[in-house]
Amino acid sequence: MSDVPAADSSAKEGMRLALGTLTRIPVRPPGRVDAAVAGAAMRRAPLIGALLAAIPITALALLDWSMPAAGSPLRSMLLAAMCIAGLAWLTRGIHLDGLADTADALASGTPAERALQIARQSDIGPFGVMTLVLVLLLQACGLAVAIDAGRGGLALAAAVIGSRLTLVWACTPLLPAARPDGLGAMVAGTTRLRDGILLTLAVTAAGGAAGWLVVGSAAGTVLMPAGILAALLAGAIVLRTARRRLGGITGDVLGACVECGCCAALVATAIAC
Figure (cartoon, rainbow, N blue to C red):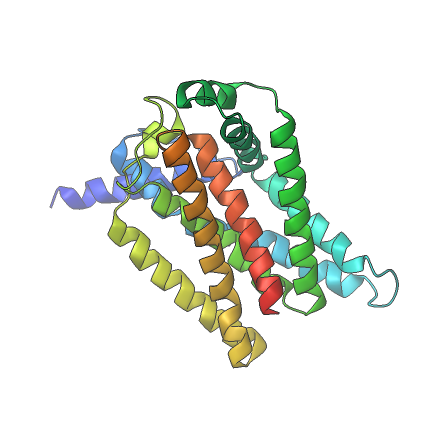
């Protein structure tokens, strides 16, 4: 019986850790941070993604309604850029910072120890800047195509939720921490393969159902699952590269998974539109 209160406590503390780490929502810090709490936080990353997605989706619906359809051909691009900027603000830009640091580390061509030192430096190098520009451009363009097709909300949901689902897989025992300290060391190995499989099935099925309800056809059913699976594929590529070059995951690598997954999802949903 004592395991039940402990599990409830880990779930509550994990939710606080997830909100405090993955968003700028003000919450009380968790009373403890151990493997159980870290695992609970990472398992709730897709739920955090759903909460985050609801804000720009609502804003997009209001902006889309208030801005006249006729006019500049860049209307959809403006709406998309505003949504992407809003997501960056809601997450304090932490994932973008991780993407830039990871790009600099991986592109340095140096041994793992030196590459990890480069990732920890406060400045951003040319590879980091180039990666940020290209990823944000692809995200905005992909979302703009979906908005033009009337599927902007579904594309955003697939991208934000799917990219956070990559964190569940990143924290399975398949991937060690690249260094003995930091966020990567805190969350490495704290989720189970079963968690990744079950959450992937649940999120993909829910995405298919949402697409059917919104679009009302088979075409809508595949839209969100395509984006979610694209996000997972991009995350897997980032994780495989980090394992080979850095020896495992870091907090920066987790941020790179999120942003690359979001980018891949938006491009995939644009193609599926």
